[in-house]
Image (tube, rainbow, N blue to C red; front, side, top):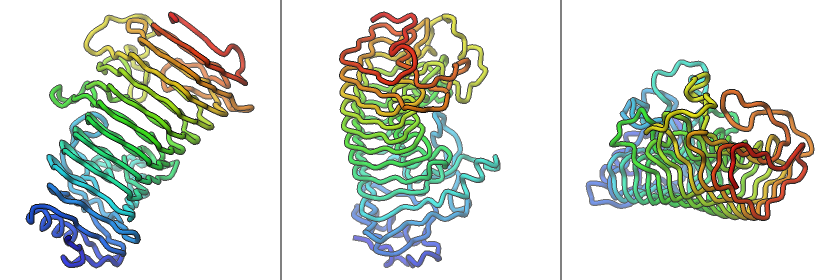
Length: 418
């Protein structure tokens, strides 16, 4: 056990304790591993770098308070939004580590408001720090802690193997920009469970790089379980993409509640991105107040608005950049007070989505709702309390699906084979 106060940390909420905490981490690693302990107090810190076989423990009443000085977050090379580039280092990070953990009942407060303002003003030279991000690590555990006010994405493991995130609370204001909750990126064997996530962007987003990333870094994100989580606000409950050039497969989502998320289950990609999303199973989920409970969008336009290739509704040649989506199964779903549409599934004419199943799904539309766009794509007409819209799908199977309160037909099909 290595107590940070023994290495000079003040924990008074005023002194900068970065160097003292880092000394404790380094001493722990030099001793072969162990636990770095932060007792009750408020520790102001900049970027910290974990080491092999080190557990950072925050006891109840302990807070790591992120420094608001950009100089305390050195610029490093890291994947950000699907591309390897220079970014500010995360508050807690590490590269090519093994047996690392952040645990306890304490709090990590990113004090992100100043970073959000710089982002909105367009004055950032480098992307904002993430709160926690590990790259190319094995056996990662994040358990019990409360994470709040992240400058950017909150938890972002990249190319990590064997990751467990359990009993974590994430609290970012609903209007904070791009403050995703948990974003596994090109990771495998990830277990996310028993978490409470209330954020300003996607609650959980599963990614695997873009077409602009080096091909040898475009590893798949696979074998992911998400269970017993509550997700509030956010643009999506569980989102796959749009960075998916490495592929996403074997995703199991169960026993979750989505409250007021813009979308519930959301898959997104576009021409040029390539990759495949396959074998996604969602069961025992309750949603309330979603704009659209379930969407698959292969015309995703964010970052490519007006691009003629992305927006073209006519068939294009199939190539390595053509995204593929197949075997998406949802069962035992209740969605109350949906606002724009019961669901919105739009494949490509040259590459239809293959195999979509809805089984024991009950969706009620809100009594009143303002018109809006169920997905981000060029040329989409506003919708209001519409039914389930499906286009360019091969193998649509509906069993015990009930949609109530919609305006017009409950099911709208275009170039879809049941």
